[in-house]
Length: 418
Ligand code: UD1
Image 1 (cartoon, rainbow, N blue to C red):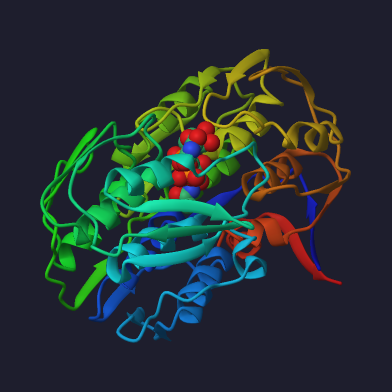
Image 2: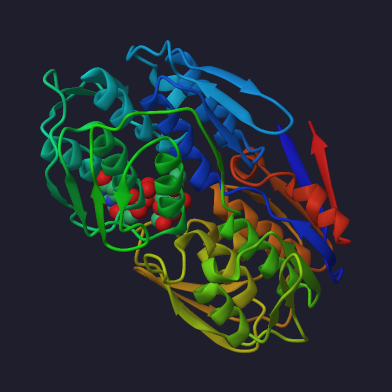
């Protein structure tokens, strides 16, 4: 099991290539199961969640060829068999294979997923969407058993909330349904928009991407396709925080300003200077960070996936910040670990009050989930002395070569394999 050893206090300066978005890549890999024709995906990030998702679809019979330029998935010989819990428990996104298998084959049996331990994270909305399209669903012994022997039928689907994953499930299922499907209260996240772009390149007819109302024509005639995933806005926001917390400057190569507007707004309120560069976005921090109040919300609001990273910044701000988490009820699990570095954070339900400290001190800490582990990295970059972070595999799920990218900007960071 690897550890990260970080000695803080170095100002970061450099350019970081932002990888393809993990959360765009995962549904696109699942979408490959819809079609008997090959789908080439380029810009997939080299992270273990992507490896795991490719493994899952290959267990269903998809052929996966990873070349230098991209990954070609051929799902011609896929069958809707069963993939065991051990394989899917690591990743909540494994639920995304349910809709394509059911839609294409009329039946599917998929284990209830695992993933980050951040609250209950039910899959009821995914199942409601599929029922609305005519499937019968049962949960038996930890498996979701879905049937639609006469095929799915287009319908008006109203999501109870703008869930990213359930919107993706609805889109994929509706492509194979007969007739038109209207998806209301859909999520507007760039990753959902990118899935629409991928499905359209595969032959689907979909309108309304980026709005709360998606219209899917149905009975798609699939064709071979190629799709390039968008840059990872969460990775970009994380390096922006790394620049800020060290009073440094990082060019986020490939990052798209329009996907980061609420994030950059909070960053600027904390004292950053942000400007568009030739290759992406440049973020520079200056002196002491200012406190900020912000609330996580569905896109285009501030993303929950950057809450922990911004909390690390707030923990050394000049004053108190108030952070409200409205997406996941249990997403402050990083707080006890952060406190080992000397932070002062009070929790009251879904609200964290972060009293900025003049400095932090390195300590041994443990990663508990993907974004939590990276907030410990950020705090360690600003802390005096050495921090040792254990259970780095959480970090490898979603960050491509984090230690190397930070080292290239001057960070004193080492990965130690035990
Ligand atoms: C996706 C992202 C994740 C991000 C989250 C919110 C991927 C692979 N993951 O997760 O990184 O933090 O969006 O932006 O894209 N909910 C239900 N029932 C459901 C589905 C969701 O109650 O069936 C709830 C969740 O518990 C949560 C809220 O809806 O409170 C939003 O979750 P959702 O948008 O579905 O998140 P994911 O798609 O799992």
